[in-house]
Length: 337
Image 1 (cartoon, rainbow, N blue to C red):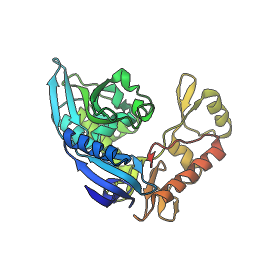
Image 2 (image 1 turned 60 degrees about the vertical axis):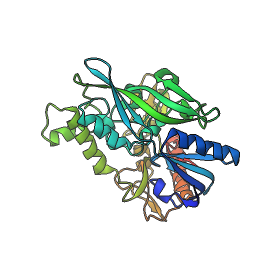
Image 3 (image 1 turned 180 degrees about the horizontal axis):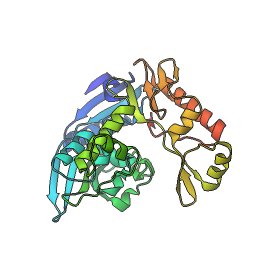
Image 4 (image 1 turned 120 degrees about the vertical axis):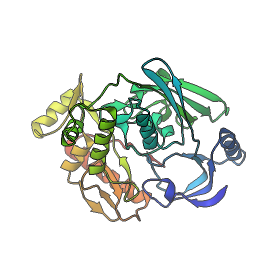
């Protein structure tokens, strides 16, 4: 265990906040020991995965636990399906690449999403027409009160848009240890209709795409418009795409005829990036912080020297602008500490 430890390498924003205590755990036994230590010394706990969905606005006066549980296992379910289980410390993109090497289908549209496997159910991560809930079987968690293991199935996780029980009433009660997915072995369901996948496949000269081709297209698209956190600190999409009542959307369309939206019954999902761009934030920099020049939804640590408070204040400026112009209040997707 280390004291006054810089968390700069452990958050993708590259914010230099310190933890009073820090420890890295590689087994369930070490994790339980660390939690007991925190309880005995009345310390708050901060669990760190890939650090891709957190904004540290201040030093952490407690014990930061880096989860480094590793391992992947497989179970043959039937002729066309396999259950693949990954420990929480496995890098998400590397895990997706592992499944594709085995020709397991289901995760290809989620290629190159930053972070680790353990945080994927918390956010119900999604991209290009696929969400975790589409292939999720269960996850094993540690109850932080009893230190006993518990399994959550698909229904119990109550997945929503970038949401789950782990962000609602289960927040702070559990730590995810491993996640199981049901993937296809041969009769793959290829999803190319969302976003620019079809166009990118055409650019690659591919007319009958495999799951590997879809993954390659997704990677190309993401690399073309999203900054690499290793080169410029960021946490990917900073805001959720807001959902508003259809009547509100129709009213906005009278005033902003080019407004984009995706109707679903009596509500419409509006792209947050479009709203932010219309308010003049795309590529805008204030001090050490900027909205990315190619994707307004991504806030970046432009100089590498931004504090968490600077990034938070910048995001507040965006929220205020969008609310003033469109009457829509954006919600941060990133967890704020």
